[in-house]
Image (cartoon, rainbow, N blue to C red; front, top):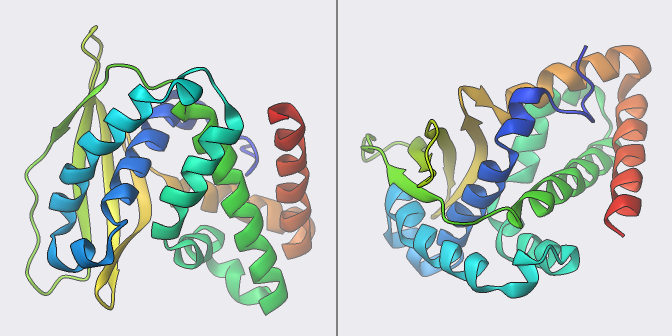
Length: 220
């Protein structure tokens, strides 16, 4: 049984790749004017180089300065992820059981959990390269997928990394990520449902809160 607080071995295997490439895609959305005028694949492509350069040249990030990494994630990544949509999808059918106050707590705790996940991985970036797959979408699409692969110059199998982005108004935001065939939201949905079955919505909130407190102590 997989706990929502302990992702499976497949998730752990590519955690670093997820963190880095989500950051790259999110950086691409940092300018509203650019987000309105560029296609999702162009946004991902444009900022990938910028973010790789930033992470690789920041000695504090490379040395594992968690405060610096968290600051990067919070300011440059999270504003461009649709956390309400991502969290609601992760909680699934149990979302409607939660009160507005409970929903807010789940969003806040899930957001913090992902901050710790991404922060713990960004420091592992070295000389990975990104290969962009052909992008296919119709002009009127509001949900699209951008496919990439992470290539390690030292060898090994490429890591498949796909983004699902949704357009709300003029902006595109990330709503899910797929690595090696595993969608992040689906992975959490399965474990969140187990947690709600055991302890209800409050049980899920309690578990997420406990995990974040443990991670805060470890990072501190």
